[in-house]
Length: 172
Image 1 (cartoon, rainbow, N blue to C red):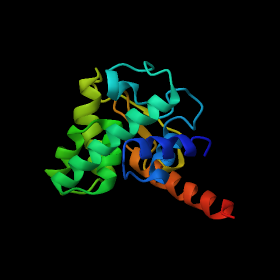
Image 2 (image 1 turned 90 degrees about the vertical axis):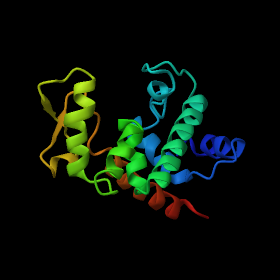
Image 3 (image 1 turned 120 degrees about the vertical axis):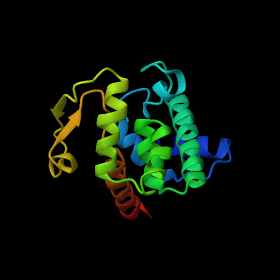
Image 4 (image 1 turned 60 degrees about the horizontal axis):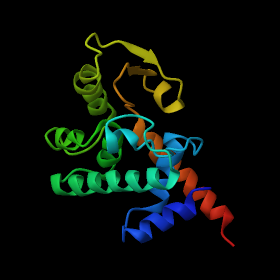
């Protein structure tokens, strides 16, 4: 919640209608606000991790990337959560979902992770590791090495509920 004023400022500066609570939920999912690149947007902005050294710039780039994903998702006729998952997987995921039913599912996210993301980053053997997050553990608890986070959009969705609860209880 510390970043709420910065998120509001960046949204206003860019006349962006992205959902403030969604952005805050993504910050919480990405870094809990404990790193300078709070939205871990360096990789999408520059192709390399940890190149953004200013939180406001991270939020600006993160909102820019998410907004583009949301535009592509609308254009392709897929659900919003596909756009959120594409924040983790890259925008090509949006087209993949459009070709496979139009709705982000764990099954499709798993297949994309295994067959597209992981091999593109060197995991040709489908090697996995245990991911100790409740949402993951309910579904087998495995992620593919270099395969992104299959559960990313669901974690953001859960954290969005937390943000809304916090807002509800902190309103005057």
